[in-house]
Image (tube, rainbow, N blue to C red; front, side):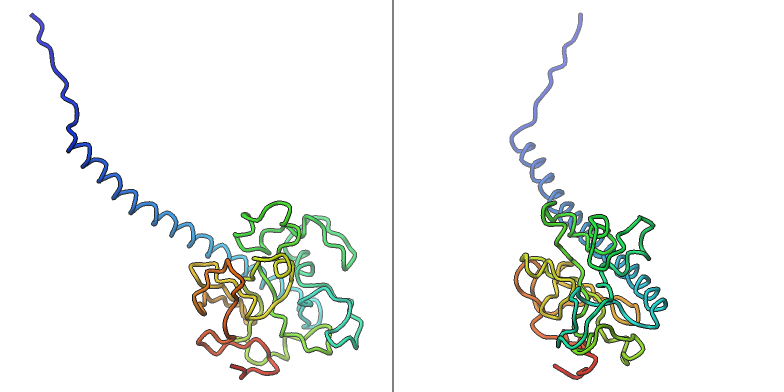
Length: 238
């Protein structure tokens, strides 16, 4: 005779225990995955800033110590000088890629705009229609005196505290399109902190206020509880 084995299904209590265990595991794993993703994005941004610094360094070596322009205006801020130097976003390209790039100062190609080294990883989430006019990393606009087209890096005294590039806001079309900005344009997109590249080449993750980088809020003040310098001519501004 053959014996039959009866299969006993799970009881309601056993199913509830399994569901609870799965829920607990999910509650542990998912935040860890998101945290790891955010950390990876922050590291990529830091590496991009370091690569950009090397490009800035090569540019200044090739241009008698002059930094590229923070903006693409054809005149100095006070309108007294005609400026022919390239905006930083274009000036660094020949040090970042071997692609054939446009020769005209004001002509920035699609390839140049989309070089991901010049962008924070959040750039990949920007809709394609807006990528051409989005700058997720910005240059400190206060480095340049109003009457000048360019500034010599040798005239900046406190290089370890003076801001060069930073995570920039992109929450509106007007600010997203800017190549430059100041502390009010900082975006704390890396776990409520921003990556800041200083003139000496080091990068710091700095938090100032509670913004998560997705709103109209930049930094509420320029120093972020530290002795940061945005304007080399006025280093002691609060």
